[in-house]
Length: 182
View 1 (tube, rainbow, N blue to C red):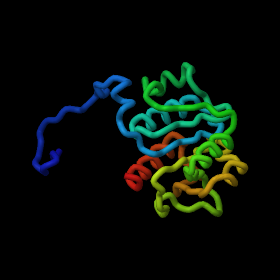
View 2 (view 1 turned 60 degrees about the vertical axis):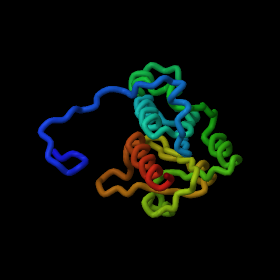
View 3 (view 1 turned 135 degrees about the vertical axis):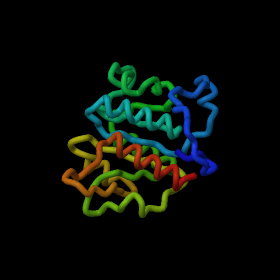
């Protein structure tokens, strides 16, 4: 294995510990001007995984809409691995309310969905602040929500299935936003 200088290393340590920082210190760190909006997700395990991704990316906010699981919730606590306290989140009764909330604050909102009108996420010019709607595992983003969004983007799929797992899609889109927004 090669180190950062390109020299061959024969031993290395895997960093298998969380950052040593208080919640207060974490909250003072700058946040990525990105919001994820979850449109009626069925799986609390997926939501917990998304909490972890949002913590890693230090997003501005996570909006849990409709019947999407939200804290306190045992399955979220299990799969989020302690990140619930570190991610700024809000629950909205509807996804349309969350989309409207951001748009009223001049934050563009894009839906991630495979449609005949969507644009590849890699071909977009990312704004300085962005909201991304992720849809239900079986039904996707609702048509009413897509109609309210400023853009519809998609992650290309090359296999049998037409979409990526929602937690995986969150990571793909989140890291592309980090690349384009920073």
